[in-house]
Length: 452
Image 1: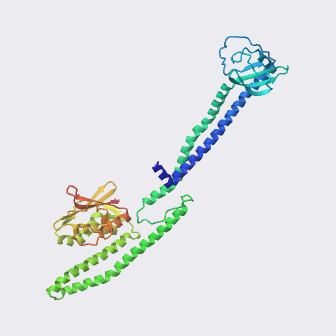
Image 2 (image 1 turned 90 degrees about the vertical axis):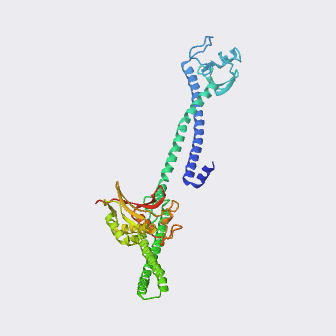
Image 3 (image 1 turned 180 degrees about the vertical axis):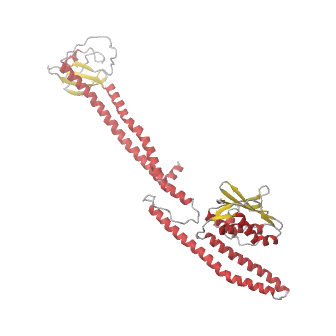
């Protein structure tokens, strides 16, 4: 019950359905009572009219009455029979305690017209009429059977209401559900949107009542898009402005390294050069992240995966050799994918760079590509420590680095991969290279297959 109360207070759809159902119930109850009373009155009027017609028939046919004592006639129902007798013969009634023997002891003082009289413990509906010959006759019938037939007729008149009420409830429930369907559809569409998709919601097909709400959401989306674009522009501008002085510092460090210096100065110059190189890499990755998150459209083309692998290995092979890492491509068959070549190059390069940096010396990094129906699966596997299931969602956050790692880095590599995947519609999945030992990282990228 508490759950229903909560739904009733939280849901406009439930409140509307309940309110309409209660209104239908109230109207149906009032209409049913009115129909029942009307049908009951009409049944009684028809029964009274039957008594009148019997009296008129008796008068028109100039019938005469006599009261022979006979056995019960087949088909004669004592409760529903219509009794006709001369009112004056009431004094000839055999007894007042038996209503089955005619004549019955009706009061001789009854006035012409309809009335209800109690005879022998039974109520009779009577019609007294003075005929054209001056005789007064009484036409009577027991009220019990009349009331029973009237009630049955009235209940039959309620049957349409009893059938219509549940049908109306179902129709109202379905109608309310359909009326609120555009809101549910709008909610699903917004929920399925990528977080980078900040384009306005189409309001033309929506009901007028919720259109102002959608307009307000569109204005909010526009403000959020402007804010995000400002943030991306700031990161890109700041990184771009820092690139020149960092390049100058790097050149100065290289010149300084070539200058004869004491041993102590050389030892201090080495960490300085390494710090400058890390800063340059951080600036390059910030620029790459800003480009990946930008709304600039890069037209997709058909790209060779092996060609991208070759270019990445050419760039990163010196880093792998410095750690004595065995790196190469496992698959021999090339596959074409539909994506911007620059996006795919940045995506694969960041994955391979991460794999080399977090793989211990003497380890292994393997690149592969597999065709699965209409999709292409790119995989980068390493023999490093891997990423636990608890951290697999957090590693995509900017500047997040796994706890306990000693490898220097900016924590932007997987953020760039995620940004490119979201913009291009690719799907990224993390797992272990060795599921048995729960070690090594395997990054799988699912892309759309090219036509080549």
